Image 1: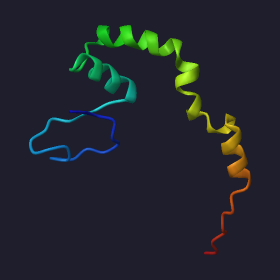
Image 2 (image 1 turned 90 degrees about the horizontal axis):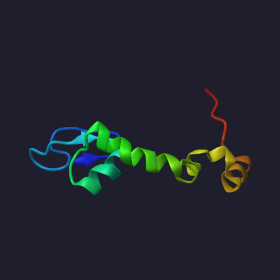
Image 3 (image 1 turned 90 degrees about the vertical axis):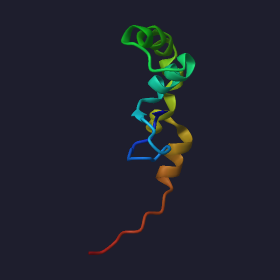
Image 4 (image 1 turned 180 degrees about the vertical axis):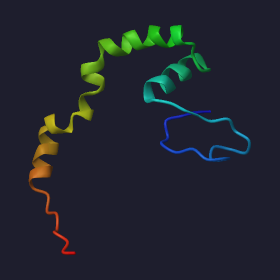
Length: 82
C-alpha cells in the first residue's frame, strides 16, 4: 500500500499490509504505474508535475489567498491566562 498519511503503525491498512509512506506526487505516480516507480520513472512524471507547479501548489501559499488572509485577520482567538 502507498499511503500519504503522516502516520504508520502495524496493521493500520490491513492485516500484514506492507505500507509505504509517500508524498502526494509519489503516490500519484505509483497509482498510475500500479507499483512503486524507479527513480528514472518518477523523474519522468516529476518533470510534468514541475511544469504545473505554480497551479498545483498555489494552495500551499495560504498568505497569498485573499479568503485566508481575510479569515485570519478576522479570527477571534481568545487569550489564555496562565
